[in-house]
Length: 350
Image 1 (cartoon, rainbow, N blue to C red):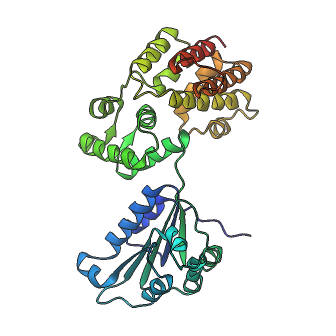
Image 2: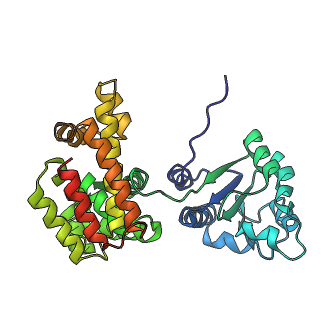
Image 3: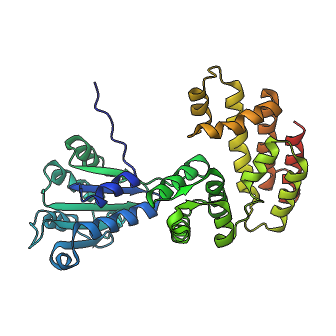
């Protein structure tokens, strides 16, 4: 039987580091720089005391680093400390150096076969995966380190899951509406998003609970006029509330971009279609189909299924795709919020 693949995430590695558990080699790679920067800084902070860093912390930058020198440093024992930390930042620039060989990063392969137990090597490679297959293969085969693929967080369920994970990490409870408000308003700019969550953590104090009221008061996002409330109103087929929200969006376009609303509508009605067409109707299967994490989240789909049939869902998804195309200026010159209002009318009458 094949070995179970380790589920490596920023949050799991962060928890290890905070407990003082360190891997010999970390490869932090991908398009999302936030996780790479935060984790590499945390490793340095927790692996060495301030007094140990002068002699046991070595930081190299890819635009000028010699990989052979980095490896030689990794093979040195720490001075008056438990470990040495070697960080190669901007490793994606190594192959772009004048005179550097494109396969220089593959030189880490031999080190990965038998890394020094007292060294923590951190390689930060931004913009994508390292083009050093022999090294990565050896790293995984010998289990001498770990690879974190820091992918850009997609909007929708993935982003909401990240918000929930971060809130849990800082010791806060956050409800679905609050999560949706933050995701819609801030998006996947993780630096800003987590900064706002850190601020909210301080504000909520001992209650440890982030609510829509607190978000509205301290971040300026309306708790009554947002995509979460819009979908609730559409589920209930409440046209008065729906058009009040759309009117608010049009008057506050900066905080309520049409493309975000369209994305949220597409995500919901696509999930609703999966819900109404699912053959296995037990709750666990239905939750898996729509990506729900808690049983209470299923109420919205149950309510919506009474007002929207399978045919209605298929038609609505078509309407949403047409609207998305038109808002991009393809086949229409209508103003974006006029197109959104037209889409909402079609949804309500589907």
